[in-house]
Amino acid sequence: MGRYIARRLLALIPVLLGVSLLVFSLIRLIPGDPVTVMLGERARVEDIERVREEMGFNRPVYIQYLEWLSRVLRGDLGKSIINRTPVMSELKQRLPATIEMVVASMFLGVTIGIGIGILSAIKPNSWLDILSMFGALVGVSMPIYWLALVLIYALAVNRKIFPPSARLDVELTVVRHTGFMLIDTLLMRDFKLFLNAVWHLILPSIVLSTVIMPILARLTRSSMLEVLRQDYVRTARAKGLREQAVIIRHALKNALLPVVTVVGLQLGGLLGGALLTETIFSWPGMGLWTYRAILSRDYPIVQGAVLVSATIYVFVNLIVDISYAYLDPRIRYQ
Image 1: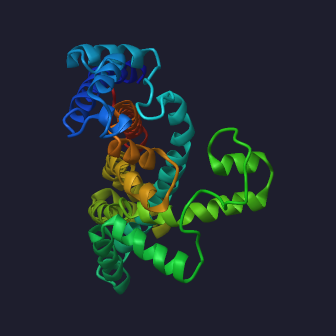
Image 2 (image 1 turned 30 degrees about the vertical axis):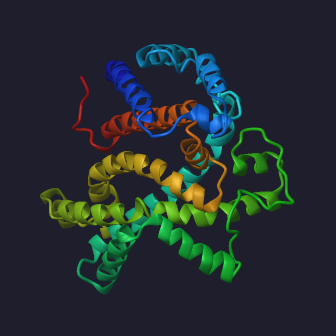
């Protein structure tokens, strides 16, 4: 297992190099000049040329890429073109907010999606099965920006049950230790602050969880139905085992193999969906930060945010591959 993990880690190097090259190249295909955005449309030509020279934009693109890659390998993602602050320091402030929302969304999507799929498979063609699969079909068909606006209007603006934006009420403050609001409020031992942070997290997490929840519900149902027809499940029932033990100990573990694969792949969907969700809910995370950087042609921020998201994505997929060994002992890594 150790050699397998080492080989997979080495294989990640060309993948991440390819991602960095794509990110660096594609961002330069976006129309617009970042220096003109920074100085304004009425800036003099000599001022624009001077700033372009200072920032190295006059050099060949491959030289710019090699210089940027060299800095990235030293842990330096450069400075923002617009406000001249280090990208890494801003990233450290905004990444916990995105991770907190993505983890909460993943928790909701996985637990509810798999739960619905299991219940549907246990009682196929029942009213519960039909209603669940219809709900999953509706859920996977709804754009998250439309669902977010509907929930904000219905539950935040009209009913005032949940706050429409931000991570905490305006009048409340938290001492920043980790950047994760739930953890920092617990470290302060202030349960009122903790509940306030949870309350702000619920609505964006529900919206983002719909990216993964319907897919997991349908996949778990079909996988469970297939496993429940296998001979070893019939044997387990013939031996007199309780139905609960057959489902949990014999069927569920094998049925989860394709589900785990999809969970890893869907993380990319959640990170992409976070950009829309954070923008709509004014959530101060990487998504909103990247969206504003794209509008202002702030190349270093976009490159840094996409590279970090891609790195998280490939490492999560590595963890998914390794988890196969636990879920299916027949798999052996040589």
